[in-house]
Picture 1: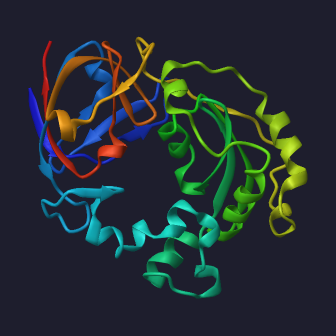
Picture 2: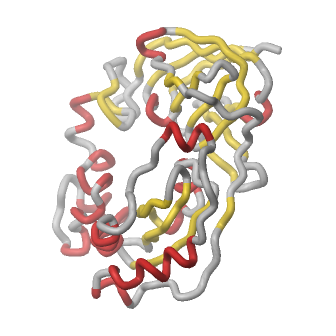
Length: 265
């Protein structure tokens, strides 16, 4: 069976284990069903997720010219504290920015390689945690806009990490943490503007990933350079495909690549 389409981040379904779907324009693949099967990946061309042209992808699935133009790639996306829609101030597209920024946001703690703080729209819980490969997570603050979430994250970054070590996450070298205790410990560092939105009482969410075998020394596949790769799929975690020879492929980091996927026995 052969499929072809432009890569976008895998869609997920919160289940035990997490269900993963690679979605193309006219087809989709349930990646869980491909575990223990041989998969061939072949680079075909580029397709910018904004203009659809065959131009090298710069970042976030779009070509260089689109990256510096579209609102989806503005600085406030990666740095929520730069959000300005609550001030009625436009960055690139005020209508879009109001739609995204002026909705409930969550500041959370997630444990994927270590305990980290992060921000996501409330509608993206638990999707965001799945994408990061977190085996446990908890909401600590729910605010009405992205700016408040951003300044809260900035304040907490002085006391807890905001990064995930992808190798540690993929090797599953993790330990369980009491995230309720972490939440209480970090409460003292929440900015006054967001303190009223602190979540006093909730519990951890635990996540289980479809992995048969974790890589001992994960090596990242550069499909643009290698052009093609074949291996046996043994797991999916975060947005990574894990193969039995320790090769891992970050689907989200390769958005905008048109690939051909051949599924063997």
